[in-house]
Figure 1: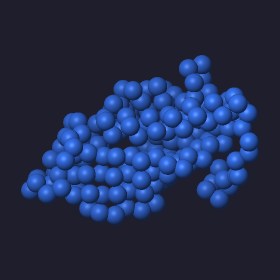
Figure 2: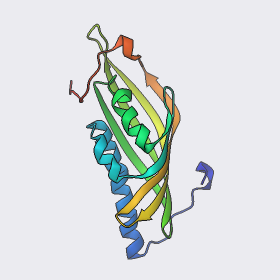
Figure 3: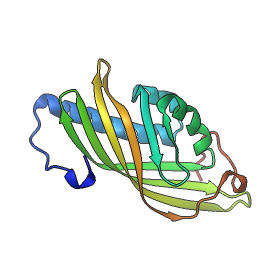
Figure 4: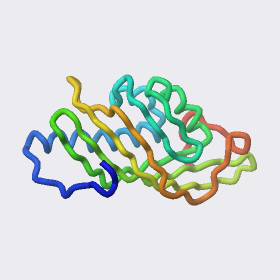
Length: 167
């Protein structure tokens, strides 16, 4: 589904409404886990062979098993992040689904000089879902870049944080 092909939602059956609620909660769960660096909990969100593509500056494209190892290093340059996920548009089709979700992603860095900088990333998550015995899981995810504002510094210029630290 391209961004131009999003359809007007039709009325959902009670069963579909439950599916929709589960998918939406899992979209929000992802943001919470990323911000709190609870990467092991994300195993319950992705199928084992899911392909994750962060199609953004300094991003990467990896299978979930490798992305899970990349995330701690990829996020340690940020003192704190906040992934605000909004406007999830979900299309259900039996045991598969697609969703498009806005991401307003805020990243705080601490330069080695002590200065705190903020970078805001505006993006869209494009997800392909499959229903499994344990519930809905993401089979493919692409984070599409829309706009960034603020400063972004590479690891050699900032302090690193294994865990988020409020400012």
